[in-house]
Length: 371
Ligand SMILES: [Zn+2]
Image (cartoon, rainbow, N blue to C red; front, top):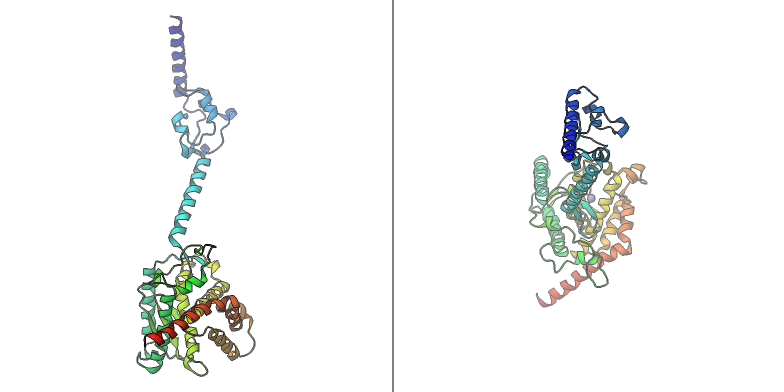
């Protein structure tokens, strides 16, 4: 009986406290402006001092940092939601960001053949090809009156050299047949057991490319060439003038094919949002990379690799005067002297000599037994 009375009094007391809450709505109720401030027990609004049924004082003390309560006192279920705790929100955000970065890396990170340089390429091979086709069609329309006929002797000469290099690229990189990839074999780091270290370089973008090599008579272009994504190569007639030879033409075309193998155009396009990385130094590094891949291509195509060094020595002598500040630091290409020096280094030239030896031996055997 006594317990019943005590319980009745306690219930009445709780009921009285609840009525007090309803009767004092104008008290210092946390508003949206006070939502995120730190509420200490000393600063608790009056409305919290009267603890409603189902909410113990221990709970209020435990959850004194409340971020959600506005016009109503906190409930245990409401205050225990994870997204009300900024530390949990921050930890989850960090996890989500890390997962997104990992997914981006897995999807877009590629390794350049021969140099094994890692780079992010956002464009797919298909969109790269479409971009190249579109640019090439536009260029041909603009230069229609300067493009030499495909059956012109000079055009045939250039295309025969280019075909040799392109075939060497497909064979040397194992694009169609992974068993015979001499260019990858000599440039891949191996462990003690002879197993390749690191992931396989990206070569799938070369499959099914519609290669096209044209010769353009443009006196302003000089002895040079250029390439576009999707296997499009433009050679200017200045490269056919004296003192340049077939070896020089092969060196320049191999360099341009090296750009296409390394996907430099889409690499640059992928960096466009980060303009800070579009520095001459970055372009010069890509040029050196194309030089290196081109050197290996020359060897794999049966051209003596020393011709690349000789070409840049020749062009360095043709330059009028010493190199200017612009030539040295602001030009996208390294100095010809530096390119010649780089291609003469034993660890660079030696890589190209191996495919050249293999090509020479195979050629000798083919001529002996299959003529
Ligand atoms: Zn280049």
